[in-house]
Length: 566
Image (cartoon, rainbow, N blue to C red; front, side, top):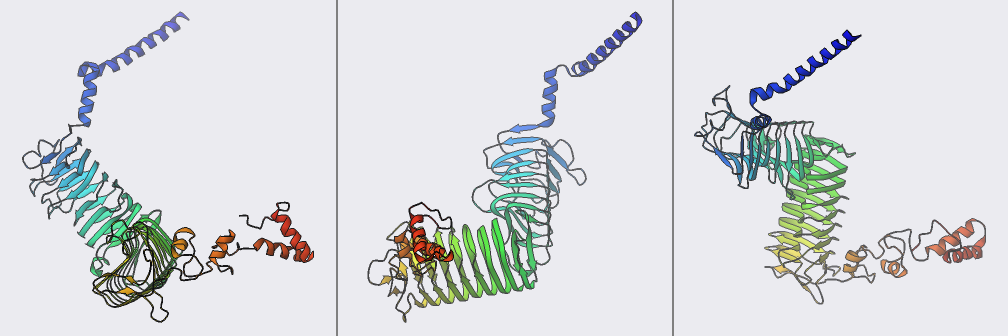
């Protein structure tokens, strides 16, 4: 028994000595624990500075941990920690066009740019495994064919690239509140693949891009925006499996006689197509809900768009936009070179511009509610043959002339009547402008009815501009329901063009006086009496019993759950 105990003690002693030896080896070889920590920190961060640095031919070797700057053995610039209030954290400026380099495993913070590449470095620079706070962009015309891989990019403005960029596996954040671009790309032979973008209703802006692949990108509160509509810069690019706010990106090219429905896309780009209906979609938190180029006979119906720009259309023949709602930031609809268009029964709110139309012919703008515009409700430039009727437009006017519900430039053959124009703000500011116009009528001569102007008091209404045009017949209450248009639009939200907004046989004024809802056809003056009598008749009790039921219900003795209580 004693021998067994001695054997166990010997084993424990040996194990203890071995453990102590293992712990002492690092101390014996490196001095002390503090030096170990210092060495580890030095291996993680090679350079820490609060000032931006400029890397050029003179100093690039000193910033590099290895490499000779040639193909197959590039300079490796790594483990930098730069946190500066300077505009640039790292500026590659003065590096030879023959020099190869890789910037990797670094954290770079600049007030404007995290990394900026000025030089001619076609295919010779890579940014890998970095966190860059501030834009990552290029300057020189030959700063091309970069590799940007596996980085986290955070910036208030977009990163910009030209020709040949290989942009893969990056995580990109737009940190500014304003809607703009999160990423810009130009020219040919690019690969944008397997990236995740977080924007603020921002765009991946694509300009004159050819032979480029966009694949497996995930976009949150962002979307694609094409800033050039020439077919040659569209058709030979590849868009595959890009997801926008959880739904596929709809890149629709050469579509004919198609119905696009069931809310299947997070954004739609429609080009070179004929007879296409887009309906029942919700486009939320994107830069542009729908872009339409070079198309004929297009209908957009019953869509919801909450975006920087609702619909952008260019070079389109015959377009109908109806029964849709738009909420956003810049333009609800921006059209250029669009002919034979009808815009009707839409609700538009909180944009800088409601409808911005240029170089168009044959336009009908009818029965739209365009409210809370920041600058212009309707802005028309070089348009002809336009009817603008039965629209409600309100505009937040702070400085007269800067914000206007309707502005028309260099246009002809325009009729504007039966509309409601209201200023939310400056109550004396003018509400309409026309400049260099021909044959524009601000009233209907046959019915002798013009428009409602919230700052009109008496007589005719003068239109600001160089033509001396006037509205001969401005009105206060077009539907004759004893409610002014300001009351209808801003307080009761009733239809100023219809005396009975809900069609229940009682005017809006009568319902408001009686305390019933002028927008609910099931709620009208005397409804409780009628239903009670009908109920009595249905149960075979006769009219007296029905009347009794009515009075009991009014006194609260008898509850009728189907009667709406006021």
